[in-house]
Length: 79
Image (cartoon, rainbow, N blue to C red; front, side, top):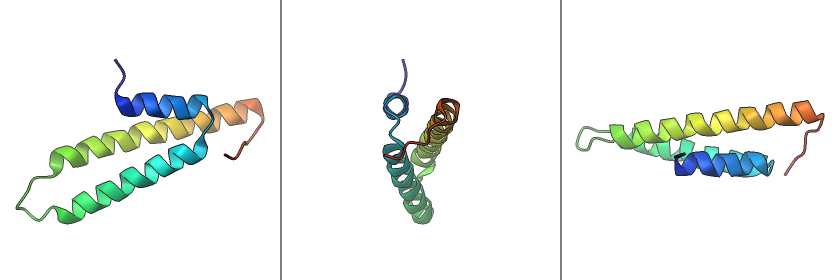
């Protein structure tokens, strides 16, 4: 069964919603930066950081699919 982030990314790709994917990517990147800056040794943030990094990779793959689909269609639809 696909994860929640995979289902969300698939829906955005199907709907050709690049803005939604970009916003999702920016949000995950901000979370990653915030958690990495808090890794001072008191708490172990490695598990959530790894999960966010996995989600970023899924979003990047979705952006690549969206770009490939718009190139194949001959369109570059801005949403």
